[in-house]
Length: 271
Image (cartoon, rainbow, N blue to C red; front, side, top):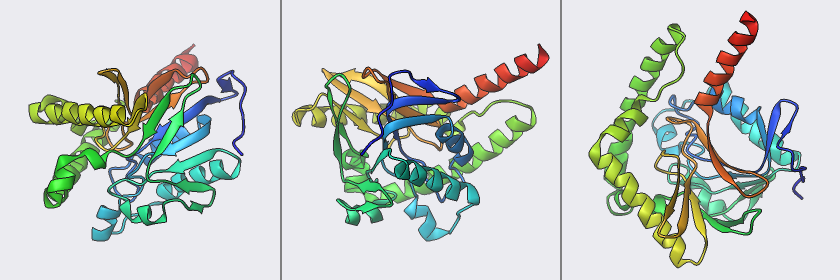
């Protein structure tokens, strides 16, 4: 049974939400910003948490095993939530599709589903799925998806170097790949088309909205009367989607929140 929290959305140092959605963590890759995700998990709590796919990157781990202690720490924190009463729903994506064979089962308090329907505090029904089901490249040309994955890994390697330099100069995290994606016309067009296709499919299934991941682009949009939510990722944007206790939805940009907190800490120390 899920633990019920009172409406006040903060208690001590932890913020409380009714529901949290995170996806595209890509544990098992160097691009995963595990330290930011750990900070997030140590700062927030919820009645329900959805893991909306690509939590572990099986594609990358088939090529080369990479699993630092921080990645264990992420898994431990999620399992600890389940143990203390948070409902954890895991919806595998294309990179962790090996877990789809366990749909309907529970492991360590984590419920594995192919998709789910979430009802918000104000009565809206939201379809929750990873989103690769609507990726034309994934469905029609799987080899292109793998080729794109290689190119993406190169970009993320550059991203790590850029941010290592920025840290040396005391600058906050910045996503090179996210910046490039928003500058390239074809990428922007693909994202927009993906969002429209997903929202249309949700509308035809009779729900009020949809929550997905997959394209690493956090967003809240109304598309032809269907509410589209994407919780983003923990490789580029480091974002989560949350539901407040009144049903209000919000995207949290955790890199920005950490940077703002550092500035506030410096201000207090200087005072």
